[in-house]
Image 1 (spheres, rainbow, N blue to C red):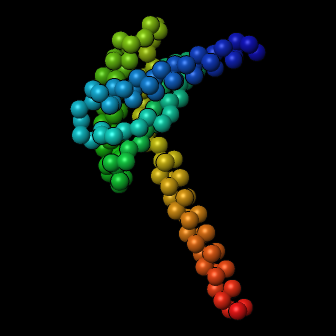
Image 2 (image 1 turned 90 degrees about the vertical axis):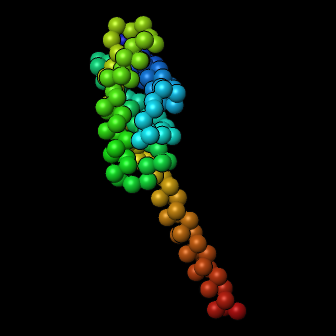
Amino acid sequence: MKQYSQAGERTQRVADFIRDEVARLLLRDMRDPRVDMVTVSEVRVSKDLAFADVYVSSLRTNDEMARKAMIDTLNGAAGWIRSELAKRHTMRTTPRPRFHYDELIESSAKLDRAIDRAIAADNERLTEAGDESA
């Protein structure tokens, strides 16, 4: 049981390292205009440390085609990103990054707007009910 928790801690440390370094690389070294203002929200590393699923989002990608272009660009640069990561650690192998668009930010914004509309509708109904009783 103890070994499982140590392995879990290691994959989490590797995921945290990759998240921080990929964010730094995208901010400082990536020159492609399709990859602008990118946020690395989460990294999940496989148990064997072979793959790192990197979840990103960007405020500049406002449609599906822009998101796809950004993810395709990042996946195209995955070899370069992996080699840059390899220079910054002492592990035997470097997980291969696979980029995915994280839709959680947009989903939460949509949910916030829906909640705001529901609250406004409830307030409007309460106001109308108060006016009718007066």
